[in-house]
Length: 227
Image 1 (spheres, rainbow, N blue to C red):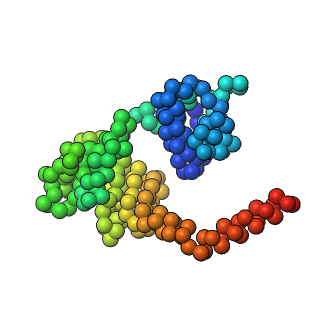
Image 2 (tube, rainbow, N blue to C red):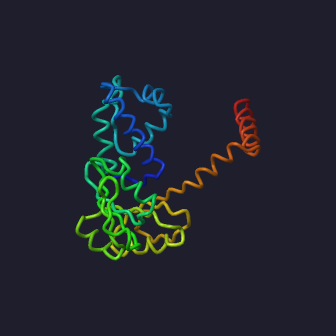
Image 3 (cartoon, rainbow, N blue to C red):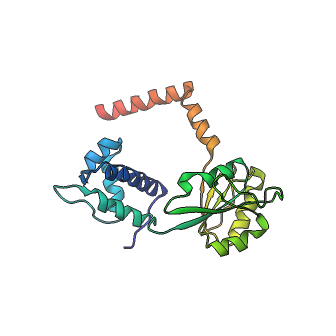
């Protein structure tokens, strides 16, 4: 099936739906309506139906969704019916923690190696046994292990260098933990996780500015309803 443009927010929600479906399947639920699904997981049923409509018709009138079938469809849509090998550039505390993270070592994903330019780290392994190589061996290991995804977990000042080095190997999918703006060429998908920005957003919710913003929003919503 060919799909049109699908936003990052939509694919993010698909991953959430899949997680919910896994929970339902584990609980023995066979079928569920979009409204029941939304109510149970505090989601928007209309948004869910719209997201799924990008990829076809999955619901059955009078029944709703067959949990196992919808789960299988989402697995294929998200490309999770395949296995992906991952490398991490940066073997500091964050890099090693990511290498041992259970979410990166599942049926679909497997961290095969870390890389660093510190000679004293080369040859060591993480707690879960992931080997650390010198960054000079990046091309060789990526080719040997048939790597699909790279993770950047280096200091901010070397972030662009790490990205450029990874792109030289032909990798097109990158998860970036460097808290700085990177120059990303076309054809390369880079998802950035900036923990500091997330904390700053939380901090804003504790300020008087956020309280004033909420009051303004309530007034606007009130005017809209009265109109």
